[in-house]
Image (cartoon, rainbow, N blue to C red):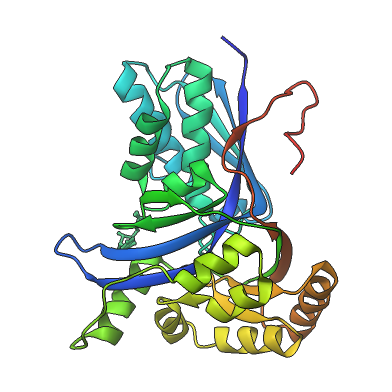
Length: 310
Ligand code: C5P
């Protein structure tokens, strides 16, 4: 058995998030076009006397280290299926904003699952890992596969989406998080009594991804949760305006927020937008990243200490 396994997992932005009416189970049917972006958490699992989670990084204090952590739940779920005691130390090196709408928790779940699978040599197939991911949360399967994908159902049923070229993003991280269930509840409140259309993926958006056409993608970006996120956090409108004022081709809330995402024409423009957002004091910090990014990968070379370079 190897001593430890490290897995690197990307963040995501939703380039389209079409939200249907609440289902009887409380979830919402989605047409959710995920795009993985090059901000990564690294999850290392090491055999230990008992299950333990630690986290390092600027936002580490906001990460729960108990059994509610998706990484711990992933280890428990996989161990349960294979009759293994989940005696591992899970360490999360966190670079993805916490509770920001960028699937940081989901990334840790997918990463811990893949790392434990490698550590324990369970031989679980890809479909089985994806099913465990779906049990852990609606966004977790995408964290495993990365790239770009359309998620339907509650977002867990994935079909790969073709992408051409590289997209340049700026992310503005807000102070504090937004609870995803609270944002969906606000969506329900705002749409009460209205006919909510069936969510469908936009062919124009999928074509823009396929051809790598940044301007066409900018014109097609949409997030059905944005009104709800803005209703709960009105100050995000100032952040969105600061980014578009600095030349972003488009601005939107990332998933359930409160991170906001800005699509830039190129790398230089992304840096200009990031600087303007910092100067505007409408966010806590900014991050520049490109997409698409590969999904969860086991790092090849553990001898160098640091994980695979993005
Ligand atoms: O699946 P996950 O645990 O990430 O979902 C968190 C919460 O977000 C759910 O409990 C639900 O309130 C909301 N949600 C939803 N519809 C979805 C996905 C999530 O209402 N498709």
